Amino acid sequence: MADNVGNKDAKSFSENIPFSNNGGYHVKGASNYDWGMKDRLSRIFNPKSGNTVMLAFDHGYFMGPTSGLERLDLLIPELAEYADCLMGTRGAIRSSVPTTYNKAIALRASSGSSVLQDDLSHESMVVDIDDSIKMNASAIAIQTFIGADGQKETIEALNKAVNLGSKYSIPTMGVVAVGKEMERTNKFFLLATRMLAEFGVQIVKTYYCDEFEKVASACPVPLVVAGGKKVPEKDALTLAYKSIQGGAAGVDMGRNIFQSKYPREMIQAVNKVVHEGYSDTEAYEFFENMVN
Ligand code: R5P
Image (cartoon, rainbow, N blue to C red; front, side):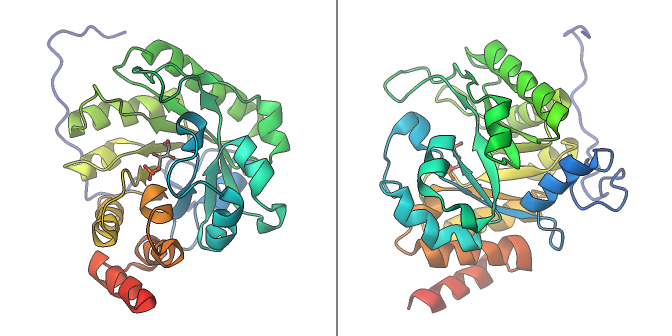
């Protein structure tokens, strides 16, 4: 390991120069993967736009039935056709998502704490790779707490997932966690996203931040941006727009879709931004026209 003294801060990100090792494949950093891995990534990332709308509904794995997610069996059928990928737990997906949708699945495979605790940072890989294969997962998602108490165990869980995922060509999505003690600065996200990519994940889920372009530029695999807590629809569409403009390859959005009064219309507006090049203003007009 390089010593930690006298390091120079990174500063030359070449944000305007496209990633150079893509060999014609539409997923960033994936040109050297094998066929099975690319096939799964192509189910998540639309080959035309290169992007993905992931619908996140895995919150119950540590929060229980939060607002909007009380009845997955009713919610998912309403929204699934507008999602490229469904992100959930095996329990939620097996029990409540019809097999006929044939959507990509980002399977939440880490767990270990609950909202009843102060410190949520202790997670391990709890879903066997065998069960991920049985679920036909297009990716397995592992939460990693960089800079928090659970850093070592979650890095180990992430690397275990990458090892097993590589064996069976199942992409790992590293989820950058932000605990309540953790700063949401571009310095933190530069560190965390790059660390996860260097551990070998094929996708990084992160949050939007100032100078997001640098974060995206320095991460050699696609970033998908979480929606975060519920905000007005216009603001959530602005977040999606700024993320795509900044170099994200999609969103992994939950509450800003399923807690909207109009979730079906909201996910369609998000699609316009992610796949069709709409600005946030255009997408919000589209949303308003549908709900009024
Ligand atoms: C958190 O529990 C999960 O990782 C969610 O999948 C993620 O935070 C995205 O959901 P939201 O858009 O509600 O933040």
